[in-house]
Amino acid sequence: MSYRKSVIFVGLGLLLGSPAYAQSVESFYHGNTINIYIGTGESAGAVGAYPRILSQFISKYIPGNPTLVVRNMPGAGGIKAANYVYGLAPQDGTVWGFITRGFLLAPLLKYQGVEFNPTKFKWIGSPARTVSIGAIWSDNTNVRTIQEAMQNEVVVGATSPGQDTGVFPKALNQLTGTKFKIVTGYKSVGDVDLAMEKGEVHGKVGFTWASLNSGRSMNWVRDKKITVLVQLGVEKDPSIPAEVPLALDLAKTPADRQLLELLCAPSATGYPSFMGPGVPDERVKSIREAYLQTMKDPGFVDALKIQSLDIDPIRGEDIADIVSRLYAQPASVVERAREMLPPS
Image (cartoon, rainbow, N blue to C red; front, side, top):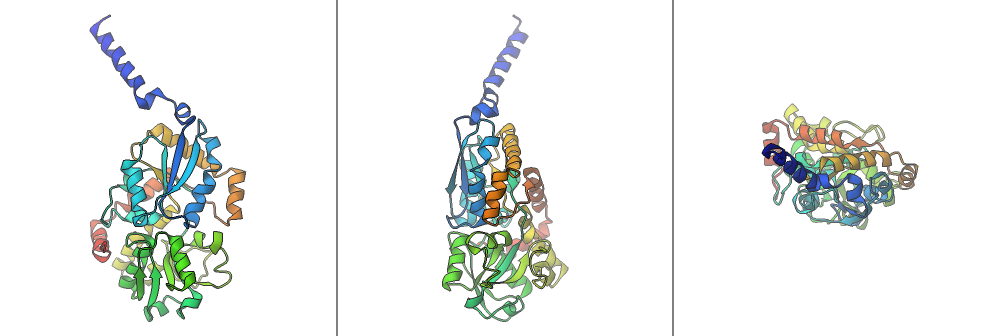
């Protein structure tokens, strides 16, 4: 055998023997386990409900039919879990992250402890589109409109300065003149809800509209326990009363509006989920396909209806595009956001 042929055969042997090529997707996942990490505590509302329901149905659509185990990893408003999925977890397709979308801004705003780049995650998908809102527990304060929140102090609970519940009220204070007093340190958005019910805080700026209308809080709006003050998306949600203003329309200058658009942009991802940057593309493709198949599964759809959860899926590729655009914002806008929203 010639030297050239020997080199070719050796090269092929090394290639075919490498982990990326030695196993098909089906053989890899057969008998294996995918760990789903929710980046918040047990009381996670829709953020936790979606992956828990998903885990009951998606295995049959994944080649090899792996077992799925759901775990909670609260900490720093999702940053702890994002760091884990990005660099500490196995990069083989056995770890899947579900974190409230506010974590997307953390690297952009240069928050401490961030060790991930959202543009490099392998985005899987989102089960629904939604918009964030600011609202108060009606019995805790006499404030009923966002204009009244500009005249009176409103105490709001938050998980961390870098999550929606910390970012949005601080931005509104500086750009629209509201008087939100922010209390951080709650382990999950669900814990903030409990604090409202107990009267510890007046409300929360950074509700997800879909979460508010599902699970244990599904009747809060109907029963007028909650009063919605403002919408925090890039456009109004038609299911929210028309008189509730969009935060972007409260901006005093075009520059302020552009800044609010940057901060509200993650809402377009709904309830995003992702795998680490090193996961082989063929496994990512299989999980994305299984995800979209599950979105049409009758049992999955019925389970969502029972908990009053919406379904309006966003593909992983589309989430990746949204994230790329977010990180392509003008440097001047990003710098202003960093100056306005320092980590402490």
